[in-house]
Image 1: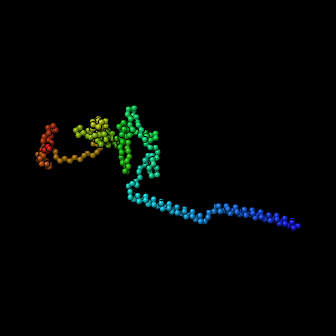
Image 2 (image 1 turned 60 degrees about the vertical axis):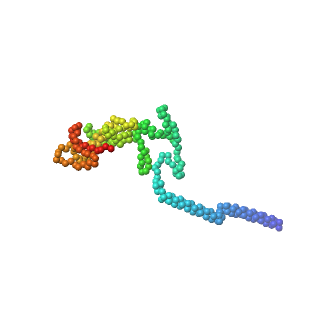
Length: 278
């Protein structure tokens, strides 16, 4: 009976030890997982301090950059003017890196006759305008708008004006009242002897160009019909034969003379001025 009781107690002891070991193992696994997830308090506080220091340093650097930019704008306001948009553009990293393809020099053979230097950008070929202007007889010039350069190209220097009134044979010719032939780039001058323009369209020496002369005459004829008559002030009429009329006083320098003489070719009197030659 004592042996049976001892056996029963031994079995009970073994079960109790097994349960104790199982509970101990479960508690150990649970505690180890909680420690792996949670950081120690002193380490987490250190991380927080480092993050705050980095944020403060970044904020100070941004404020310093903004202050420098403001000082540069105040010191050089003229350099802060924005430039017009450029084809191809520049990158935002300081504007030093060009976007797209770069230009390269290329030979251009014209009608198997002569070669000129051009520029190539990918599949695009660019020819010098000095050659294009002479070869195709076109026009172009550099102009400035708001401080920026711009190139203006046109096939003709003339402008088309809307007709203001019905056309009459003895009236204004088309819209020539708006033409200014004498200020064209290819007009060398207005001949003082002939009273017509000298053209340099086909040569720099200057010559009479019938089409240009016709345009010059028609423009002034049309302006004579549309513009106000010029103001004419008469100081004295040399052909006045009335002896009682007193001529205006003329200031004649010393050594010079002035007299009214008869001009047989014009059938009237003219004023003759005589000045000593040097």
